[in-house]
Image (tube, rainbow over all chains, first blue to last red; front, side, top):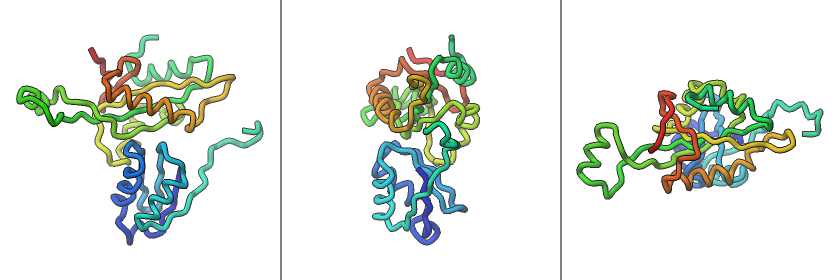
Length: 76
Length: 134
């Protein structure tokens, strides 16, 4: 799951993002692209819970649709 | 086939009759609170310690072209790890398992590592060397 965080620079920053997500799932894989204000998360929790955890920590979050590379032609 | 490198693992995954999803559990070595002095000395010299899972991820083999790519991507998380355990989840009827289907097997891997049951997994050090547990 991918999120854009509009106030990454003015909030608690990448460390705060990681802390918020790790509090939800301590084994989450979190990569923060500070330059692009994007956070990639792979964890056991659903995207809405991750977004809520980030919002609760003061981040302005928007889910970004990831492109799977699937053309959809097979119905997948 | 005998797996002696990360490339062997990728090759083996590609040779299966069903598409595979690779499951990774990254673990850090730490000194238990109740460690003896001897264990402490060994740990400080780079041996021993207990393995604690620190993060998990699942990927398609095509998303991990090499061990170096996995290492580089893991560095982006900022999390320290010493050993990565790998297992492969097989698809069915030609369909590759999705990430949701990988969640439970990943949790089982984490539990197994907590209890020392690592014999079913392939493990690699940060250098990409295969790690065997006896």
